[in-house]
Amino acid sequence: MASQSMVTGVSRRGFLTARPAPAFRPLPPGITTTSLAACTGCGDCVTACPQQILLIAEDRVAIDFARGECTFCDACAGACAEAVFTLPAAMGHRAAISDGCLARRGTTCMSCRDACPEDAIRFIPRMGGPFLPDLSAAACTGCGACIAPCPAEAIAMRQKEPAHA
Image 1: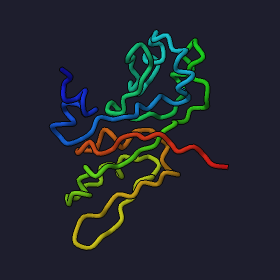
Image 2: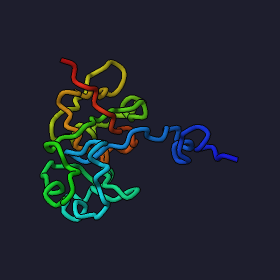
Image 3: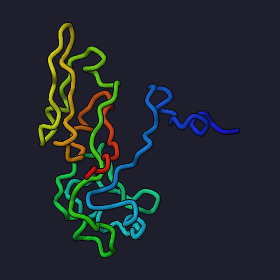
């Protein structure tokens, strides 16, 4: 018999906190899903990362923003002997703020705004409640600086929409 998490696609923690399991796994800067196949899982990029946010998961490099933010230093790409980091140091994702956000639930919090090095998150005043977050998709670099400081774990990365010509 399948467990609850297998049936609904929700992790046990997500079930207990009413948060769905993330459907999208962000990639480190300069990696595409195609180039990720060249990753041997050697860990050279993990060792080279000064922010210590890279790890090896399922025999491939992954990024964990709960550990900190990406500074786009490109040390990971410089340490990789394979053709994994094929693009300039940029992310294929951006932050998204869920309804679990404390400010959206009536509690004053601006942790994400204070942590964002790009000022991509601002707070809009509203009558009768705390200011509400507004994330500029154009300004967000996907660095992940807003994720770890969020006390409600209400920020996740989402795939960027493809650019339309």
